[in-house]
Length: 389
Image 1 (cartoon, rainbow, N blue to C red):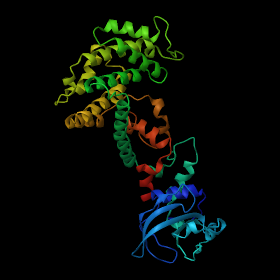
Image 2: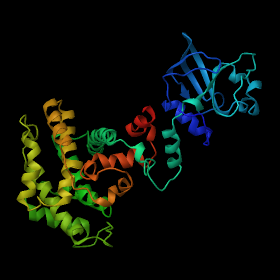
Image 3: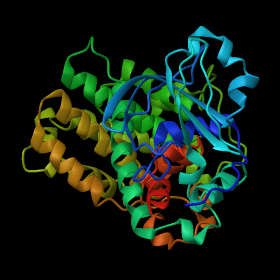
Image 4: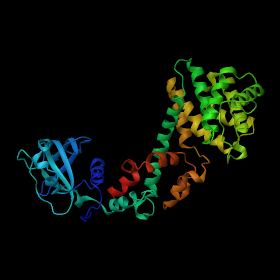
């Protein structure tokens, strides 16, 4: 651990305290008392101390109350806390820089003083420097900061969470007013249409699917394609707007609509009981449908198997308390290898890692979208491991 100057904002210091990103094994106040943090407290978004309702043991005595953080000890007086009764319940004053000294509250009490700067690792300071560089991942370029084993563990966590997120996306399309079997099939079908729209035409594809289901119940594929093309405005005028600029031939709406109708036909005409099978055979249905229409080599179909079909089966397991199905889906999800476009994961190229760990794992997308880009680093195993080590 190092006791060098802390060159970052007080907000960073609060983040470090809240998430325990420091060595907690040998904490002592400046007067030598042992500190054990049971609860750092709740970050206070209004006037008063930084953290409320903290629970901390100081030399075998459990303290309940407030904690105030400053970069420098004399900021207590610079901010006039010694004149403010709101700070009378502060029992611990945490600082990170400079000369440390006791402070006094308005009621005459003297909070214990903890110099957190002594317990911050050099890894954390390297990370904070990267964190301020918004163009790269905070971990990028720091070879000693990354553990491949921990990175894989974090990706496994993100991969598992992504299944839950995609299941929530399916549930958002589930209509509770319908018969459950029909509501689930409709949610699955609309998710397929949405997924085949990719980014350019996702909304228009989904609306086309919704309108098609209002007039077509899966009796003939050719009829479904004709109706869908009309609803889409690709045969006659429509209010839907399609973005055709830069769209690859394979992603043209006419191609994707035909594929969506084919998969919709299979879903509508498959007995609902087949999806509730106890032998896991429903997981193989997607591949059978793909082979039937020569789509088994389609990267988009392979992606939709992970982002739409497996999550929809997981939702089905939840809706019907089918624990065996949920377990089968989780197993398939864990073993899933998906052809993810390299452009989506190019940020990971800045890390000193073998791309085999993330190049075909859907959890890598969730890691970027839900952890790296929003800077949720304090919840990431990579940072926690670096600080703890």
